[in-house]
Length: 340
Image 1 (cartoon, rainbow, N blue to C red):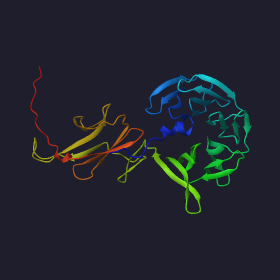
Image 2 (image 1 turned 180 degrees about the vertical axis):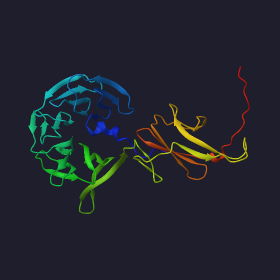
Image 3 (image 1 turned 120 degrees about the vertical axis):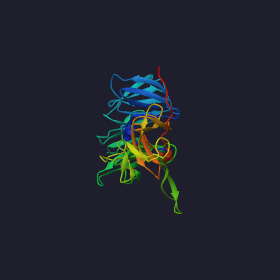
Image 4 (image 1 turned 135 degrees about the vertical axis):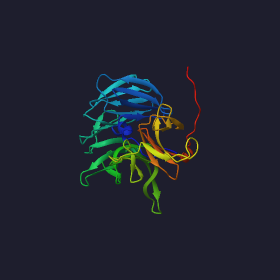
């Protein structure tokens, strides 16, 4: 069966903090004190560069260039080689950066200022602190900011005069926005409690009055599932302290070594090859699946007689498997082997 939609929210931490940038060929990420460049089509790491000086606080990329926000300045490097090109002093301390060709925007998540660079730095007439910023269509830009009146965050499109052109709001709180400079389309990373959601939205005309509204082009929801388990008979992304089954008892078929019914304790274990069905004493009975890096296994008897449901999580997804025919297991005498 395919993995469920539960996922480990830590996998998105780099994206939330803005420490990830991508072009149509390369992705650049900063973690563990090192810049990494990956090929976008297969994820192969093709270049690394340990940072010993000022550490990046944000990244963006365009064409074959990577722009690294250092808090006080913006450094420019080639992609994929990470060769330094130059560094520009910024007018404020910033931690948000958006780049399109030679145009740059910087902002701060703490300081209500937005600055633009074309040939020189210019302060825009918008007093807002944003958790992210992105250049949009026709000279506009997008930010995820907090509405002081409503007390909630929203995603807004602004022009260079600081006027709010349109907003996107819902029950989730936005963390980051990435806008297209070619069409009215945005990607928004949002959060509500332990759940994160990525939405790609397009602005389309609806109705005869040519009004426009958001249409969801793509949506993916993930939930932190490091403590997934069964609660009241149902799979939950966080089972809390509810006890979970790591083995089950089945009734063996009669015959073989015994004509009377007896029980057998079964468990599922994982190694570098995948998942195995074993007895509680460690005797392997069958190979179940080639799922790797399994961190947590939860068992549930059923559905039906002689079947077992196995949930296996690797920190990125929870996969579900059904094992059937357990009622046909019989104890047999395989004979004796003399050892020298």
